Image 1 (cartoon, rainbow, N blue to C red):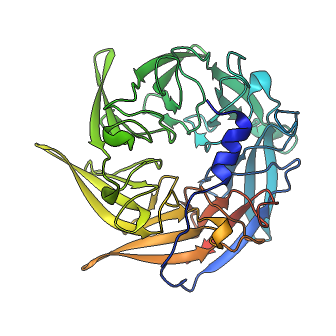
Image 2: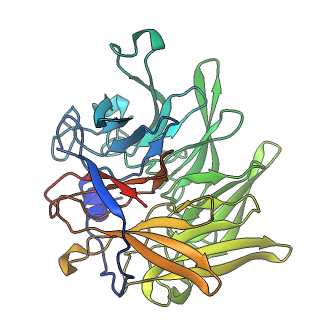
Amino acid sequence: MPSHNQRNAAVIILFALLAGLAPVAAQTFTVIHTFSGGADGGYPYAGLIVDQSGNLYGTANTGGRGTCPPQNIGCGTVFKLVNSKSGWTFQRLYAFRGNNDGQGPYGPVTFGPNGSLYGTTVDGGVNNCPSGCGLVYEVKPPAASCETTCSWTESVLYRFQGNTDGFYPIGGVAFDSAGNLYGTTTQASAGPGSVYELKPSAGKWTESTLWDFTGNTDGGNPYSGVTLDGTGKIFGTDIAGGMNNSGAVFELTRSGNAWTETTVHDFYGSSNGVIPLAGLIVEKSGKLIGATTSGGSRNGGTVYSLTPSKSGWKLSTLYDLPGPGGEPGPWAKLTMDAAGNLYGTTQGYPPGGDYGTVFKLTHTSSGWKETILHSFTGGSDGEIPYSTLVFGPNGKLYGTASISLGGAGYGTVFEITP
C-alpha cells in the first residue's frame, strides 16, 4: 500500500491532457476562499455540502494543527463557510491532531440525523497501519445556548484495525432511514477493500463488515463510498477488479442478517470507459448514473447510465469526454439538477497547460451536449478539481479546487453563477 506521501502525490499528479473542449460559456466564476495551508487547512480534495441557509461545509486534507507525517504539518480540518449579505466568512470547525482523533480527511462530510457532521480520515486511529488505519468521526455543533462562544467537538465512532474490518476509508459516508451509517475502505487484510456498516446503540457504534472484495468479478478498491436507494440496497463502484481489471459497479442486497453482492457491470474494453472512480447517482426509477476516469471513444473518460431490466443491467454511454488518454475524467460523483442536467469536474494535466474544468451536460433531442462552465488556469482560481459540485439554495454552484497557484498553493473554494 502506498505511503501517505505517495497517496498525496497520486492525487496531485494526473495522467493526461484534455483536448477539444467546448467553448467556455458566459458564467460568473468567483473564488470565495483560498486556503493558506495553515490554520484553515490545505488541499480540499473533497466536495462540499450545503445547509438550508446556504452555508457550506467541507474538509481539507492538511493544515490546522498537529504534526502529522510525512511533512510534520497540520493533520487536516473540517470547515464552514458562512454566507451573508456582506460576503463569505471562513470558520474552522475542527482541526485533527493525528493519532487517535484521525489524520488526513480525503472524503466529504455528511449531515447526520442529529445535525452533526460525519466523515472519515484515511489515516490516524490505531497504528496497525504505517500512519494509522483510518477512522469514522462525528463533529458535533455546540448547543444553541452557547453557539457563538462554544466550539464544535469531535467524537470517533470507529477506528479501523487494519484486519478483516479493512483500512484506509477514503470516501465519505451515507445514512439510511434508521440512522445506520455505511461506507467503504480501499484496503482490507483479506482483499482489496470492504463495505462496512456502523450501527448506533446506547451511545455506542458497532461495526459490521458487509462485504469483503476479492478483486475478481466483484471488483476491488472502492474509493467513493456508497449510495443507498429507497429500498435499502447499497450501490458503489470499484476502480480495480472485474473483467480486464478495469473496475466494476456493485450492488449489495440484504437478506435477513446477511448481504449478497451482485456485480451490476464489469468494465472492459477501453472504448466503453474504464476505471469508474466516481460514485453513483441513483434515480427514483432505479437507473444508475456514473462516470469513468479513462477510456471512451475520445479517451477522456465517459458519463454512463445503467438501467435495470428483467434480463440484467443495460449500459449506455451518455457522453464521451475528450482527452488523449490516461485518467483526466471525473474522479467524483456527478450532480444532477431538477431538469436532469448533469454537472461534474475534470482534472486536466498541468504540464500540458490544462488545469481542469467544470462542465455541464444537457440532454437534447440529438444527444447530450457539453458546456464548459469554467476552465481553470492554474493561478488564483485554483487547479485540479476532484470535487463533487453542489447547488446552494440561491441556485449557484459550489466546489473546490485541490491546489492553486501552479501547484504551490493549497486550493480554493469557488462559486459559479449560471
